[in-house]
Length: 271
Image (cartoon, rainbow, N blue to C red; front, top):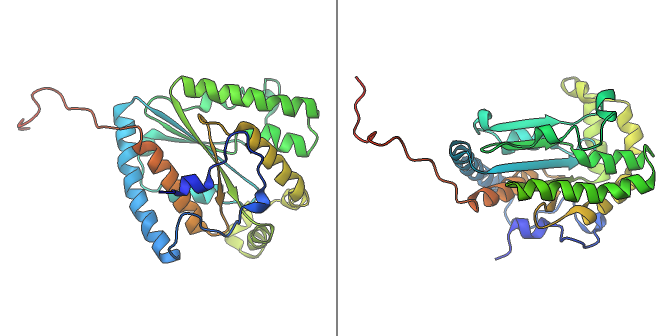
């Protein structure tokens, strides 16, 4: 049976065209918004149980990479998908413009300390991919440099996987019109104005350049150990459903189990 993950998966080495992926589509799910939200509640409950077992067992690690254009829904995805999980076992790292200290090191230096430890889920809101996206689009390095970084990224992720980290990477794919509406909301709604930056318009003007940069980056770095998934994200409910289902399937495949209690605990009465 074809799953949502199958429909969103970016095959390794295959050229990707984002224009062929409908940002308003719901591949792998035939229900409406109400059904989708009901399914999401089920997935939230499953994810909560699986994450508790992951944390308690302390054996496996999961890295979740979220990438998107401005207003793509990274923050909303984190809030909705990880609602109810144990915060002790989930860490979120947000990678904004590099600091001077970060720029003084290699481009992977700032992300590596945020990789998950055993029993943890690490969520990266933006990531090392900014250095083949923003750096490329804004000519912050030479083409030779950003192209070479594809190999460095693949080797870095392969090392994490070889050391026991399961990696899932998501590109939240919104349409240009949906982005326009969301940016306008940040202007019109006083409660959302804190999200607004005039730089958003400059980035929006580079839309086509970013589409090409994402296509090339995902085609070059989607691997069996660290696959990319293109998630249609114009509909928030489907976006959250899709990411949740991929992660639940991923954790379920780890055969997670709660550890046994101390010997002799059964029947013990606390006085």
